[in-house]
Image 1 (cartoon, rainbow, N blue to C red):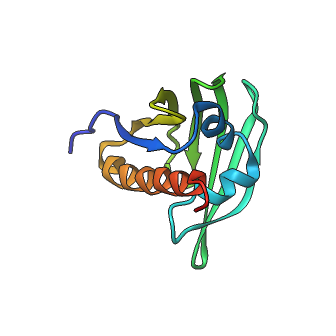
Image 2 (image 1 turned 90 degrees about the vertical axis):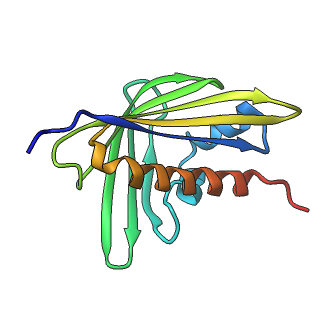
Image 3 (image 1 turned 90 degrees about the horizontal axis):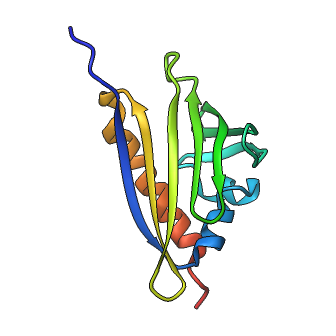
Length: 146
C-alpha cells in the first residue's frame, strides 16, 4: 500500500457582512460555538486566545462522542487572513493547517475562502463537506434579520 500525499479541502462562501465583521466571528469563542461544529454536531468547550502563538480549543459533541480540536494561531491579519493549526484526537498524530481568507465583495459582503491543508487525501471530501456546512452556518448567522 502506498502512502498518498497530503491534500487540501477548499470551500468558498459569500457572506452577508463586511470582512471586519466576518473575520471577528472567527476570534470570538461565543460566535465560534455557534458556527464551527457542522450540524448536528454541537460545541462543548470553546476557547481561543486570538494572538499569534495563542491556543484554540473546540470540543465537538455528537451523540455520546466528543472530538477534541486544538490548534495554535500562526497568522492573524485583520480583516484579511487567519491561519491556525488544527489537530484532533482522530488525527493519528498529524497536524494540519486551516487558512481563512476574507475579501471584500460587492456592497458590504465578504468572499470567504477556507483552505484546510496538509490533510490525508482520504479525509479531503469529509473535511470539504464539514467546512461547507460551517461556512453555511456562518452565513446564516450573519444574515440580517428580516
